[in-house]
Length: 364
Image (cartoon, rainbow, N blue to C red; front, side, top):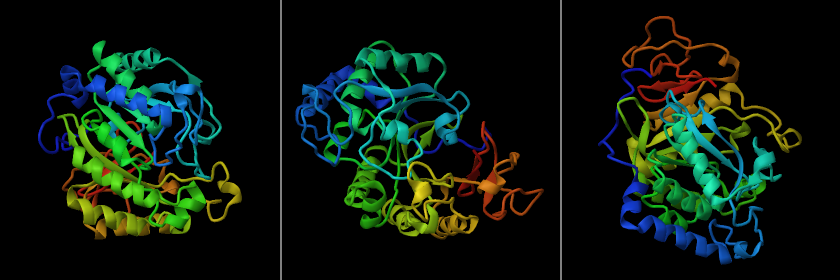
């Protein structure tokens, strides 16, 4: 990674869950979460089913971990994937039902296999042994009882790397407070600004209210991204926003909330990777990718709000080009591949990401 992608904020001595392990608090949190499965309220749905008694609620998952894949992921944002990869665990099931979900076989069709907590812990340790920078929990909200038990077991057996909570942002405030000190890096979505749009396309009319409360709590726990000298995130929150066709995502309002509530320190990943999947191809306007103009409108809102930490993605039409590293201070100089020469510096790490003097452009 480039030398100027340096540590941000105060150094972080060790992952929070190791401190909780030493005091016995991690075991108490695992027990508290597991007990909630008898009348499950791990997510805002509050189904109250007895998952310990082999019942399932909205998410479709019982009390055991159900996992679709465990592997080293090299294509997340650079502070997450770095050079060694992110130790990514894709969990089956979901608390939302997005009709355009690109992972719908995993999230909605139940693809994956059940495993024991000890096997999940062993998977975490194997990822660490392969050189993963972190353990990246993808869509794990509804399985956090088993996950925290697995972290407890793995920590006793030598797990030391940070925990990343990669989430839809549809979270219960009470459960997030039980995760305080366990999660090192929060990577939540901010999907929508309008409750009716959230209901129509993700089945959750209350998404916006729960999401905004969750983001505030995650920020309280973790604050802005802090990295090590190699630019790997050790602590903090980075919020993802996926630009949808015809601004169904309400990008301007979502970004305005982030800027207003968290200020210029907030890290944002403005994503340009939507493509029609699942029911999207038969649901206009989700039957097409966002136009370059639609994404540029979201980018313009981002820069106008003064959000200067994070990442953006190149347009689909540009994604075959490879952007060469360029100094943070370069403006309007050299052979630029980027339409925002006055704000953007580019580098690549695995796939081509870019990070601005402000926000960077990434190709995947």
